Image (cartoon, rainbow, N blue to C red; front, side):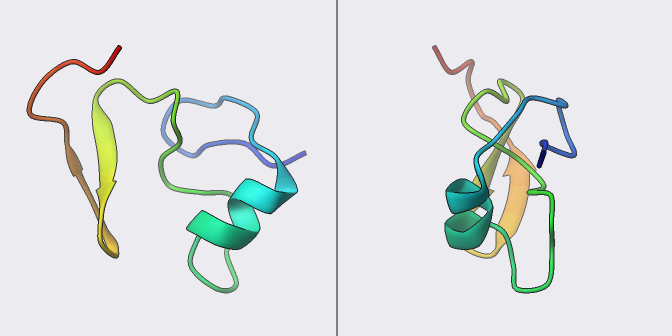
Length: 51
């Protein structure tokens, strides 16, 4: 099962296919991450808490 490298949450294979870079099996960040988010092809610290 794929899981987020940042928080360890389960993510679907479809999420990995769409949001992880080619060749990666586990995304660097997911919707459950409160401290990081995707910014284009990069991952950055969140400026504010997400709910």
